[in-house]
Structure formats: C-alpha cells, structure tokens
Amino acid sequence: MDPIQFFDLKTQAKRLRADIDRRIAAVLDHGAYIGGPEVGELETRLAAFTGARECVAVASGTDALLIAIMGEGVGPGDAVFLPAFTYNATANAILIAGGTPVFVDVERETANLDPADLERRIAATLAEGRLRPRMVIPVDLYGLPADYAAINAIAARHGMVVLADAAQSLGGRLGNRSVGALAEMSATSFYPTKTLGGYGDGGAVFTDDPARAARWRSIRWHGTDEMKRESIRVGVNGRLDSLQCAVLLSKLEIFAEELASRRRLAARYAEQLDGLVERPKGAAEADSAYGLFTIYVKNRDQVQAVLKAKGVPTSIYYLQALHHHAAFAAHAPAGGLPVAERLADEVLSLPFHPYLSDTQLDHVCAALRESL
Ligand SMILES: Cc1ncc(COP(=O)(O)O)c(C=O)c1O
Image 1 (cartoon, rainbow, N blue to C red):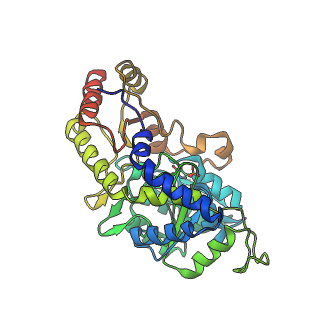
Image 2: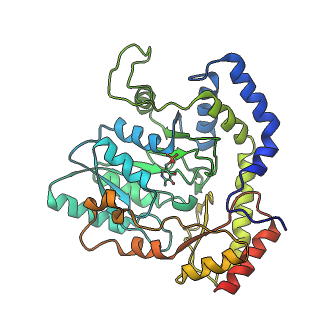
C-alpha cells in the first residue's frame, strides 16, 4: 500500500499534465495574461455547471466574499450574521468591508449555521438597536450545503440578503439545485485543496442577477467602468489571471468524475464508521461535495496520535471557534456559542481525496477502530 496522504494533488497533476501544459502554452502564445479569453470561458462553464446565471472569477475565495459584500454596500452599522465555526476568511471579509460580524451558533448534526439561533441573534440585534441586520453568510462546512430553505426564508422576512460561503462545497447539491444557485449570491474558492482547486489562489462569485454581476466585475477591477477609464466606485485588484483559469478549465473536464469518486469513498467511510463515530450529516436531499471527511471524537489527541503512529495523517478544521480568536474576540457574544465551542474540541478530518484507494481507506478505518 502506498503511503496515505491527507490530500493528494500530485496524482491529478500527473493525469492532467499534458492538457495543462497545452493550455498554459496557449496563454503564453496569446500573451493576455490578465483578462484573457480563458477568464470568460471559465465563467461560462462554471455558470452552466452550477445553474447560476452569472459567474465572476476573482483572485481568491476571500475576495469572492469581500467583493460580494462590498457590492451590497455593507458598511459601518450593518450586522452580518455568520456561523462561529468556519474559516477566519468569512469574518475577515465582513470586517474589511466595514460591516460588523454577528456570530451565530451551529447545529451539531450538520456543523452548519443553526437557523433557530440565527432567529435569536437577529431578534437580539434588533432589540439592542445598535446595528441594522443586512446580510447572512451561511457556510457549507466540509462540503455540506447549509439549510438554505430555512435561512433564505428568515433572511427574506428581515429584508436581508444571503451570501453562501461555498468555499468548501462546489459540486454539492440540495435537492435538484447545485451549490452556486442555492442563495441570492454564492462565493467559492479555488485554493489548491478545494474540490475544484487551481495551482494557486482563485475564487468565483455566482448570482442570477446581471446587475450584481456587473458591479462585481467593476469592483474586481479597481471599481472602474466598463471601459476601465474611470473609477465609479471603490474597488480592489480582485482579478483571476488567465493562467489560473486555463488550469481550472482543464480540471473542470474531470470534476464530475472526481466528485463521483468523492461520493463513493464517503459512502465507503460511512459504511464502516457509522455507528462507531458521530459525524456531521445533512438532510436526505443534501448532497455533500465532501471537501473534507470529518468525524467527532471526544479523546481527539489520543486518537490523532494513534492514527499518526499507524501512518494515517489527520487534520483539524478548526481548532477554535471564531469568536475565540484574538482578532474577532471583540464580537464574541455574552454566554458564548456552546455547540461551536464543543465542535472545536472534537472535530477530526480523515484522509480524503478522489484518488484514495479502497485499501488505504480500509486501513484508515481499521486504525481508527483500534484508536477508539
Ligand atoms: C469556509 C471558507 N471560506 C473562505 C475561504 C477563503 O478562501 P481562499 O483561501 O481562497 O481565500 C476558505 C478557504 O480557505 C474557506 O474554507
């Protein structure tokens, strides 16, 4: 058995090498390194893949969030609700735009934003009267879509817009709708280890609203008008370069096949581990993209050490709930967020990528059984 890797980017690189070399050569030949034809081609392909009308490719998943938040004019005095158990980028984007993050607890069953706690935090924000509820950013943690039916309805009732942080979930589905088309706006990441990862940083924003997409295209290019002559709003350098789009176009060719492999491997993990360990799961219609395969264990340090000794690398997403990070502690709610805090002590992600062999996966399960 080959050594087990937590992520494996090299097998895919080997598989696609000739095609990627050809596409990179094409970019070097035409010389439009920024704003080349690959950008529009990737946007068209991704819009078709997700079912969203518009896709705007940007420089990172963080820029995708930031540009979508800036596009709504969020600023001082605006409350933006987000789960307390996510990557720091979700909170950073809100704060960079000048909004105020309001942390919401998550559900243990899904590890995603808890709609009931969202209702409570909105009510508390309104009662306090200091901030205006403006936006909700649910996160599809580990690839599992959040409860958009409930969250979209709550947001609509309060006149708020929903921005899905789909950095980990591109390829997931909820019923017959794909990630990218589950909320008014969605942001994803092409960080190399994501379900669709590039060879560097990248991201994209999705919407059905052409006016929003036009604003995002302006913001990603320093806030300029369509002719790029005048700054008509404040913007950033948030472009995705042609080379990165060329790489992603190649990877898109095998994306559906890789997602199928992720789903098959996740089912194999589930078959051997369900009943043995708890893990986040969605409702029947939720189809995770399985960006990560994560379990909950109470004696995590011990389990991790035993697995390591047996050649099984693991990782923790995330060690701390966001309101416990120094940078965000000023926004920690009184009384804490108990579910998020407990998950931070218990989550453990197992080796997971489309090229994991059945033998390797079975070895992980056997080692885990012994460690427990
Ligand atoms: C939930 C979540 N949001 C946002 C991001 C930010 O994406 P990026 O690293 O591409 O800026 C990531 C990934 O790193 C993420 O996991």
